[in-house]
Length: 215
Image (cartoon, rainbow, N blue to C red; front, side, top):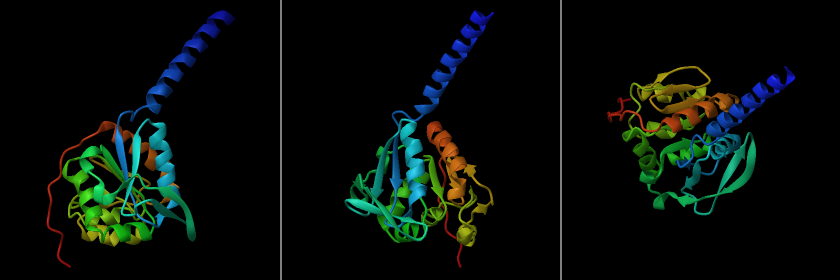
């Protein structure tokens, strides 16, 4: 009896290991861009970055900065991370999905950078999955392609998103046709899980542009 139990448990263990390996390598061969500027909220980049790499993805930090990009951690400047591709040299065609971390400073700088807006817009135009957390969705407003989309964000930018035509929801994570959004670092567990799922699924239906509502 013990021998049979050992065999069963052994098979379960092997099966579990195989499933874990398949899950771990879910994004193998996928090229993922993280678009960011100085002032990104540290954990909103480092936590998803860790998950993406563990899932087998090739990840590049894309930024207007040329060598390093500096993080913000709650109330002070923090770590610096190397920039893999400078935005003026980045080709969005080479990437399967996009991650936009939040932070108050980061997206506000990027939304005023035409190259950053154009880079992000490519993913919406072509139905490629993207994930944005906290203040990150601010950048997407500038694409003019959010009307009718279901999203969430840090509460302070809710009005901006609603004015852009978004159906805003107060949930830890909202998924809409490959777009994953969350409110804040406290939602990172749910955000990372859905990000990996959607990035693994790949291209969704393409979205048409629209003219932003007049204010």
